[in-house]
Amino acid sequence: MAARDEQPRDLRGAADLRARDVDRVWVMARVDEAFTDGQLTVDEHLDRLAAARVATTIRELDLVLRDLQVPVAPSAHRRGERRARVAVVVVAIAVVVTILAVAIAWFSAESVPDRPAAADDRPGAAAQVADRLVGGPMFSAAGLDEVVRATREKFGTTVIEGVHFYRDKAVVRVPEAVSPTGAAWYTYSLGGAFHDREVYGGQAVSSDAALRVDVARLDTRRLAELIASSPERLGLTGAANLSPNVPFRVTVGGDDGGQVWIGVNDIGIDSHLVAGLDGAILGVHRCGWGC
Image 1 (spheres, rainbow, N blue to C red):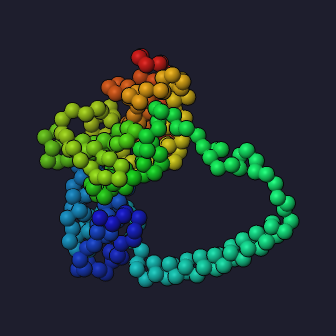
Image 2: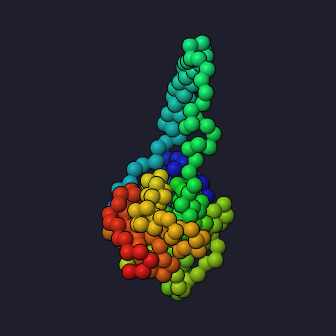
Image 3: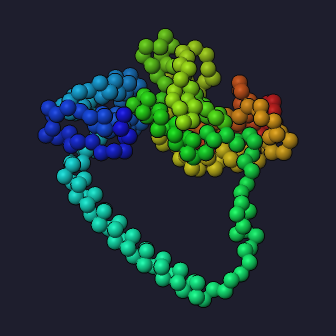
């Protein structure tokens, strides 16, 4: 399925044309936005996502958005003109930058004497060993972004019940009409796909199963920085971070419009901090390995 930031066909005047994946994904993204700003209930949101996912014509997609306050898809003509203008500007900038780079390199070579490399200039001097608690690839901005993209591609939406991030995997909880519990857990491995569907068990992501969170709203760069600093903030540095078996997780749920819980313990969370989806810290709770 196409990425949701690609542009769709103009829905106006193209009602009888066949819909593409990019058209469906664009409409589903608008349905997500309408849900998060209060235009749709949970059930309405799920129903319209399902309708958009199986739509075969532009007319059917237009009906999904018929009474919602959403932006109109830009026309292909306007997009072509804009892309042409951008291409001209990019080429011009590239030429100017190349000329400046050559000039700077020439003057630098002529005017700056040779000197021994400073300590900070040596390869690997600035490298830092990742904290064992948060050393997994899932806790990087790239890892978090991959899960968000995979969620969109797999389920057609980024509005879900929530997700647990661990060092090397993520477990998402999504509403699912065919599930006997109304939802299902799916495990995701970096570089792979969702697998191991479960409908029973699993650790809660929010205080209420009816809550939803749009994981596309996560500021993954700030969140990755916060995760990296969390062992020190929680007083868990030193001997505590030497064991590879220390349970550590990051949970994103729908409480209060969306919260991120970062901490240790595989059942409840003992020492933990709470942040918003933008990475802003809301609270820090330091209580060691057992509260």
